[in-house]
Image (cartoon, rainbow, N blue to C red; front, side, top):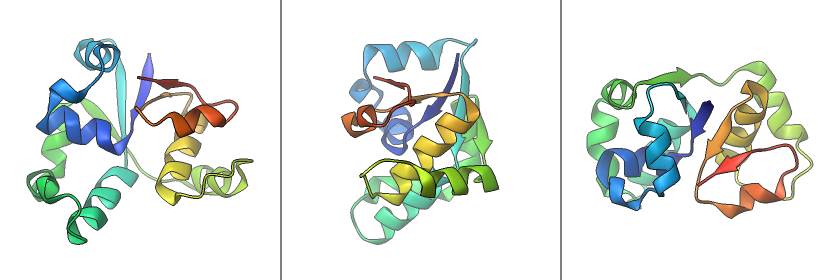
Length: 129
């Protein structure tokens, strides 16, 4: 199974795994799961950390390649197809990070691992929590 991790899923995987759902934890422990981490994640963490909302993100941002390695993940850059789909999504949700994560998951054929139920309102997107 191919999965794309939402930003909070990455944060919790590294800092507070007990906050993950059993399904998310099981997927991350399964070495057959192809785990993707979007370029959106360090971008969102960095902005929220800078604004004082996520002080706990500092160690992750200090060595984000280690986060990727620790989660046996593949870094997913933002590509042209992702940006175009993100803008074209027929979805009223306006958060640019969520829109990009949704577009990337859909383009890459990945299930989005997120507790955020707002993703359930987007047809064609698979979410797991």
